[in-house]
Image (cartoon, rainbow, N blue to C red):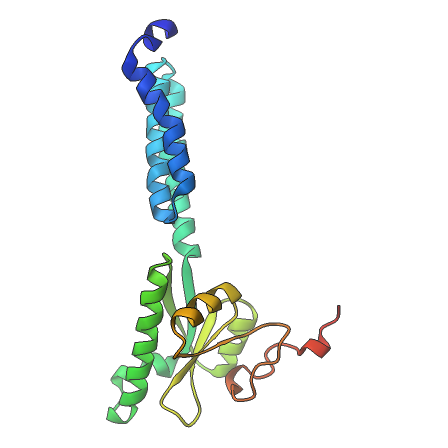
Length: 209
């Protein structure tokens, strides 16, 4: 039976698609495109199993190898490809305030929009996470609940974006050089002009080798 099936050219052609699609999965830069290609790979594999008479294996591949795995991967990618940016609750509520805070509102929205547009090209999304106080922001950043914090600069109508992930900092700083963006590290002392995160991490002299 197997020999008879192999004599059909379309079966050979379908089987030859497997390594081709697998190579396409490995070369995709967009993780969501890779998930789509992974789903197609599973569907083709299930079809090949079915043509060879292995209906039970084909059903398993279709349900587990294709539907379930792709769904779980999609959830994992969705949660991991997000920049969680901590902000003060009053920052998120500026749109409900009077005209006195209009410059701050405009600057905050501009910074957020620029960061979102930049990271969208890297298949990342930005999710502002409000916190009630600066102390809560410090703790969230220290425990790695968030990747960055956006805080108002004292005495100015501008905002500073402080990032703890070096790769994200390199991407954002390189494309938004005009914005006030700093990198927070466990082995460096935060700038004295940044009271929100001052003394968040120990200095290099305090870090034991």
